[in-house]
Amino acid sequence: MSVLSRRRLYDVLLVLLAGAVLLVFWAGVAALSARAHLLEARSELSGLQESVTSGSTDLLAPGVRSARQEAEAARTELSRPGPALVERMPLIGNTLTAGRAVAEAATVALTAADDALPAVEALREGTSGGSIDTRGLARLAALVSTARSDLAAPVATLYRASQGSVLPGAGPARADAKAQIDELSQLLGQADETLTGVLGLIGGPGSGDRTIVLAVMNNAELRGAGGYANTIAVIRSRDGLVDIGPLQDINQFAAPIGQGQTVPAPPGYEAAYGPFEANTTSWRNVLMSSDGPSSASVLCEVARLAPGVPCDGVVLVDIPALARIATLSGPVTLPTGEQLTGDALTKGLLVDAYAEPSDGEPLDQKARRDGLRGVASDVLSGLLDGQGDLAATGRSLLSAAEGRHLVLWSADPDVERALIAAGLSGATDPDGRDLQLTTVNQLSTGKLDVYVDRTVRLSAVVGADVARVTQSMTLALDLPDGLGTYVSGVLDGNLAALVEVGLARDARLTTVTVDGEARTFGRTERDGGQRVDLYQLVPNHQSRTIQITYEVPLVDGVYRVVLLPQPLAYDATLDLSITAAPGRTLSGGPIEVSGPYDKSQDYVVSTVR
Image (cartoon, rainbow, N blue to C red; front, side, top):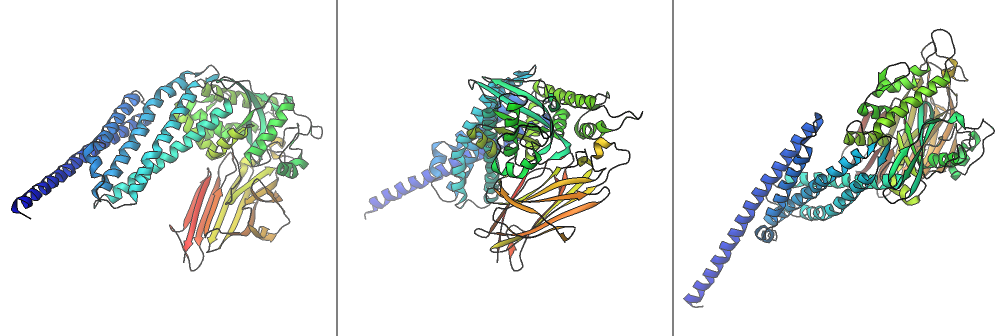
């Protein structure tokens, strides 16, 4: 090769090298600029969070819009030709790819938030005078669905980038970004399923007429799904305009015991609770199944006969859930003149309302029921009048659904599937997992359950092929002196209960004991799992511990369990322990949880030798 040819080759290589250096420099400048924009967006959002927490929302819309513009600027910087070409290089390219995915995900989320604020405001303005205009809700649902779809591409990009190498020091930042975007993706998915299910139940614009039965549950007398349904209202929806009718005492139309008309019920429900006339128009035991769809579907059938209304769906809500709403929308006034919210309202309705008059007169049950209906009506009116922060109210309702204090059911199978996916249905099907579900149906006809302390325990020792599980529930009854016969029930203050313990469909039962002694029990398969049923008497000032042990065969060495609380006036205590069998180690370490049993929980664990 001649000297001239070599020189030309060197010149070409020099130009290429200079171009590569310029591209890398361009990409570096773009990356720094994008980082600055994203940090500014995060700072803007942090300030907004503090403002909203303090109750100020005036800067919410401009703040979100400003953060959106910063995220869009970061995405633009990393989408220019220079950074796009450098993305094909090893190390630095993978780092830029991850950064671009983060910027795109932030843009999707903030665009959805910016566009959603007018829809939320429309929903707030359309919620007044005892009715809801769901057009704002429909618009919000469409925005969330679009955002969920748009987020799929940056999530996939970040996943691919997470498989490759990055520049030294960039790994932790990439992992943190991936975790946050995964969480965002899950939140959008849950929001999409929730809005789809709710709109499907109550109906949106152009959906035609719907009739939904709202039942208020009294947790002082437990049923499997929550409490005794003593008050109902009819919700009517027409083309997206929703109105809630007056609350009615079921005693107005419930048939006397032994005279109720039987209605259709799921096979498992009818076999377990038919002997208690649960699937009849006597109403009193209609919510005995802990499975929300089962109890709600029977309630719907009963409502079609007595009081005789169409029924396309059911909403179950209990006193603690109403008390949460009242905490946000403002205190409600009891017949005594007290203004209460939160736990004080729960106590006022489920404890104080049953106190015997000091003058020796019998408790005025009609006045008590009227007071309960009045409180429930005031809370619902406050909700429909848009009182309180809408976002906080939404979070409170979702939290109530997590604790199974709020259940939504639709007669439309497609809508019901969406409600199940959103976790709003109160379904107890463990879907192939082990199940912790210990429920009580009170048979004493009193209001004793607020005086029962409950401790629920699940201990699982996970091996290579099987998990050995112990479940127990301790019921401790301690009644104060001076309670009337209406509270103490037909057994003079002793609690009679049908106790049900749920477990995996394929579990192999080994023992069932009460206070360490073997007891007679029933066992059935229903609602996707097994149920162990036994009758139990808990004398006043004493306790009883029901315990079962069983083995669950594992698939691929993985133990999966879902824990579902029974909705109570006062939460049970949960003690959870998942450990490895001798000679094995639990991936992620042992799981030990102790505290209020106030929400549904899901665990997936495996062991290694």
